[in-house]
Length: 557
Image (cartoon, rainbow, N blue to C red; front, side, top):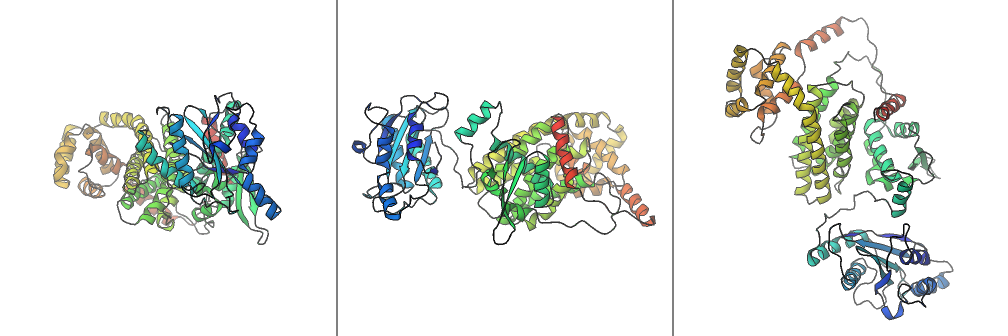
């Protein structure tokens, strides 16, 4: 059961909507099922003599008295709360909906039980699965109703009603969910042939851009280059930007950043996107794969952080991990990219909670995510190793949220896990099969078997019985060629995290080893750097380069 509280200032206009035919003639048999006083509330749906104006005047009675006292009409005096049952629920009777309405106005402060001076309200049913509760928020004593946290209180009461009425139990929220599109927004998208509303599209674009840029200025620049209309809000006293709103290309409806999602507000973006100066010192020539390795390492660390006890640090890593998923999807073109994009979008809900994030603690993961946005495409094992690590972090995030009662976030993280699993399977299976085909000769495989028994004796039998063992022998052979000692390497990667819960330990070790650097190549690059007479500073990505990344992404779709 879903309540959705909003406010307005046009009592008659809202009455005309709920008693009218609807935008697509979907309203049937509109009628009042409950009211502050059924005898005093004319019902235009059942009484042919009743009019919308008459009902509006009755509801506005205390508002009009207060208007005469103040000389102006109280602002936003109309309170509106549709309440809808979940798909598949049984249809409630009028009497049951009347009870729902009375409990909602009681718990939200509109009409507390036994309060003779409470606000005037009605509940209108015009469909099988929902009602509309309308109220005016001026009480009989002239005071405004105390409706703070009314949306949260309505949700809490609806959870109780679901249990008592035998309805589907929905997940409780914590006021960090983004606003859902209105019926008008959905109708507009449908009329334009769009699958999502402008609000939803802008939200996903804003998340994706914020994940890749390094400052708020770049954020605005890149959004503008994508055709999105950006309207900064400037404080009249300071002349500084204090907020912003966005509109889709060619649209006239702007949405404030916080109206898209709480963590897209200007202040929250400034916390995540401090201005970073361009480096002014020579930079060594880097391995193109270094960004991927740093990301894999930072993602692995995020999983460790989620098992620790500091909630603020964990929340900071969850928000940075959300950025990582967006950039991972952008950096890995291929058949599995669509699932990665879906995982990033699903995790947008899991990255937010009421816990205040320690962004500084997650700076390593956030920096790695930024680098990944501009990293060269590394086909094969290394990119899959990052996806594999991300899959386990998303699973840990679901567990972390569930432990703290964050039901909506836990469900979103589980949804991200499913998309990451699909992406991983699609990408990993052919790579593992290719590694198995390239397995070294039996003598080398036997030597590696002995090495495993020496380095990881407690897990050796499970590793050798894993179907991914032939692929792991190829990866070990490559690591040995790259300058690693197989026994030391196995001990090191096995110690990164326990293997007891791994269903396929050889597969886990394979991706951990894949993410290790090539020691011989590192030594050669270091020697080359020392011998160079001069070096050229590594340029920072520019907004134009970022925009090109998004343009490439649109072309690929």
